Length: 352
Image (cartoon, rainbow, N blue to C red; front, side, top):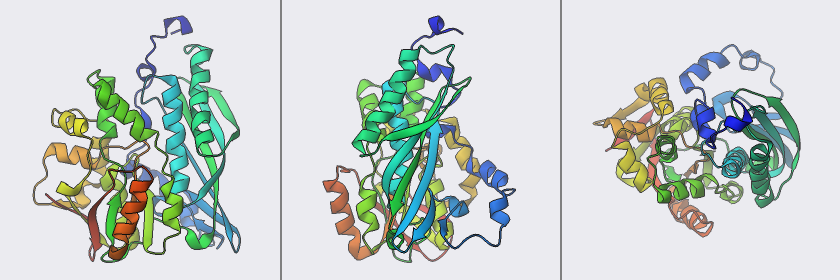
């Protein structure tokens, strides 16, 4: 295919899109078993967070009050508009810094494009979209790397900084903690409908609004001692990231289905059997750890729906729940809700 044959649909050039491109958690776990880092006994004490428990970013302490936070995230198009694709990819990458409670400092661009297929102005719009979000976050794209690839790929390496005493990992949940989610679920389902040309204009605009909303409150949440654990919901879905928190804390996460914030159109679509292949792969990887009296197939697809640039997921002391929700609401996260709590046990329990 040449540039002259480009049909204007970026999503037609890739086999998957957004965080739905991620390797399934079960497969990734097998791959990482052979990682040398997992077998090292002498990991430096300065490495406060690494590949253990699938943390959102690596954290390396450089002095008593400063630690460097580093992450990378990239994927294939989730929308056809090149500028919006760049915005979504950049927002998603920066989110990992906020999910550790850190302040982003600068970014490096990762660009893989089929240069003989996509017109140069389309590629320029992708990078411009990413740069616009970095500007909104108060950082600059200071460099990067590019390759000629078969499918379009864009993302960022993002470097941040934090005072180690404010670092929030995904492992710190305590018995009785409230579980709070800041964004509604269903972005993966909306993206699947978009690819099938079944998404309404209103649904598309809601999808753009959710996936380009920076998770800035992570910095303020990190400074609250009553917030014990923090992560964001991305490619493994709500259930996958809750299970990471539960395993890390050696507790059970319990959620109430009726409390879950869900995009209304996504709820309608999933009941019509519209979902991503990634949600099926996700459930195959961890569904055995999810307990429930009765879950319909569409409910499983929502729990495992890959969220591109999804919401912050946190555990906080019950008496801090109101303060956390107020902070999120004032920051523009009006859909934020308490969805459950942590108790003794293991795995994820869903009350339907």
